[in-house]
Image (cartoon, rainbow, N blue to C red; front, side, top):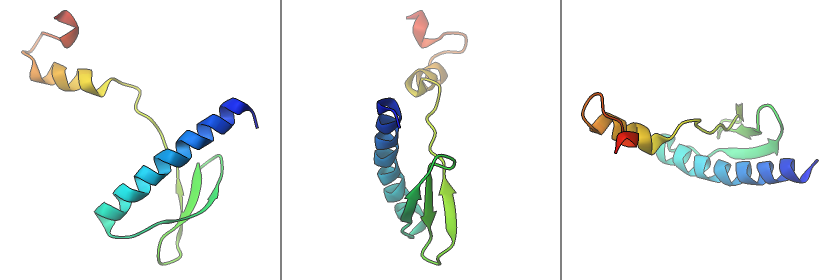
Length: 81
């Protein structure tokens, strides 16, 4: 595994911890990490033992810019200022 791939997996593992926290807050259930893989990124188990796959993705847009574009007057974009 290349250094770049190892770095990507480290970032994904950190993101998975944030996902676990959010998942438990929303569902009241804690997921258990069984193994890391490539597709999906992680194999986890619900408290019932049911296995699920988790594929982490990142948005490909600038969320802050989209929010401001919606707030500003129609026809005007944040980049116009």
